[in-house]
Amino acid sequence: MSFDPTYPHQLAPLPPQLAITNSDFGDLLLKARVELAELKGACGQIPNPLLLIAPVVIRESVASSNIENINTTLADVLQWQLFPEAEQRHPDKEVLRYREAMNWGFENFEKYSLSSRLITGIQSRLIPEGNGNYRREQNQIANLSSRESLYTPPIASDIPSLIGNWENYVNATDDALDPLIRAILAHYQFEAIHPFRDGNGRTGRILMVLQLIQSGLLQFPVLYISGYINQHRSEYYRNLLAITTDGNWHTFIEYMLTGFYERARETREDLKKITVLFDAIKTAIKTNNKKLVRSDLGEAIFKYPVITPTKLASEISVHYTTASRYLLQLAEEGILREAMVGKYHLFANHQLLSILSK
Image 1 (cartoon, rainbow, N blue to C red):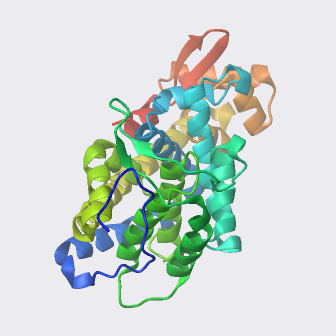
Image 2 (tube, one colour):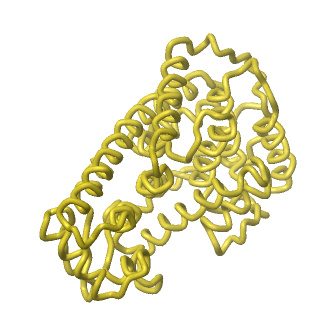
């Protein structure tokens, strides 16, 4: 039956019937694998990987949310995360939920593997009001301006069997097909199932990164793939749809391999810059402030690139006035920049923000 965007798609299970081999992608696959290996190695050499990777996860959260037209900036999210939830703007809440979902998935994927339980756990943190439940009704993807139907996902009653097939595929051992290509195939399949009312794209991108970790291609959820997709958004959706309409897997795989290659290289370069900056700031704090010789001060302004005296006091267990004095000293030395936002006194690690916002 030919594709009809108004009719629920009869999605074929994985693996695809079309023969796909590693040799189809030659040098592009090799380049992507080399850059991912370099990125993994770079993460392993960082003394505090989870600390220094944390800002990169926030950047990924912003980009992934922007793809879904949840528009905010990295600086705004880092600022508003410090304020009570009641004062936070809706887009920033959404980005912070993405970060929570990504972190929860990373902490629990070994326990649950890439399974329905992991999927619904990620979704429930991303979209709390959905409680992680698969949809029970038909939904549809339409053009936002014209309302023209672009794709109608499979019927709700097919979701359990399709997710079961997805689970079996991503957890199976297959030495014939490169795990990077398998992750790309699984990503299309999840987006085509579209198992939730909302948040399918963001959930799918988290799962794709976790699949790379499960396959041993990454050690941490550090790959900034959403930035690439966001820059080439129309091409991303066009290539996804071409698989559905024409069975054109190769163009989408090439698109994603290019994204993995470019973002792995750029993320590795950014992590190197962040590591150099981290060492330089810790040295400056130790050298210029004989009374501030405590490693957790430097760590705090990387964990929270935008910080308040209240947050710093909580992070390093000092009194508010002491934390305020520390931050003012660092601002005087040019390590931080201060600003007032309403009633809040903020201090920004501007050099780190420059690296993250390029």
